[in-house]
Figure (tube, rainbow, N blue to C red):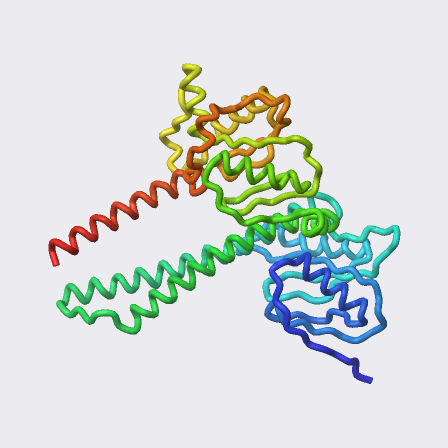
Length: 366
């Protein structure tokens, strides 16, 4: 008697969410049998069970060591000892494992921080490599197009924008967009897979966590925004240039401040100390100023909350006891350079200068 099967098309960017969905399907009596192209799932019908699913990725480099060759074999042996069985694997060599839930058993395949970090790093490396491939092939196509144009100029036959030129523009744009997507996906994957299941579920619980998209230009505006969130019972945990991540936690009468390299250097000048100005630090990755900032902030009662790459640090402290870190005159200063970074600032300036020069030359020499 043939088994009843069902195919479902589903695309998810989170393996944690994918695992929850597979477990929900198992409780309905549908068990994962195969997956193709990362989004076509084949299920087989059976008695509903509380199943658990987990993943890992296995691929070896072109010149593997003996340890790399045997890693998969040893991992499968350990997994079987813990009750996990291989179900299937996708084209990216992501293997799916399953076991029935045990009340007092170990219900995670990666049940310690070190193994989770190791597994997460593999996914980060895989997606980062895919992003680099997209950039490489886009560069090859663009250089080929440039070579074609040079040949046309040499032989004196300018054919204008042909089909290949349009293909190049579209292909390069798509590759760059896809590479950015893969790069960000690699970062999200690493962060997500480094967490235990309970940690991840807590981080996405809408009742205890929230994410707010907002562009804030001044330190005073930042403090006002964060105090408002605090009044609603949320404290800041992380930031990006335009997103703020909060956790449900009564924070008391807390205030926030932001520090940056320029502010640290201004304090050092006032104290007649040398500025942090590493001439070899071309893209702003030397964190000497951050080390100094943290020390000074802690001395004045501030607690480190998070950092925005190597551009800015946000601190929190009790409004009654904390001492000001910077002169209040900076509260209304623009913080946009700390958002885009020094390299982004230089790139923006070059773009503006190039645009002005291009406009002038095209106006006077047309």
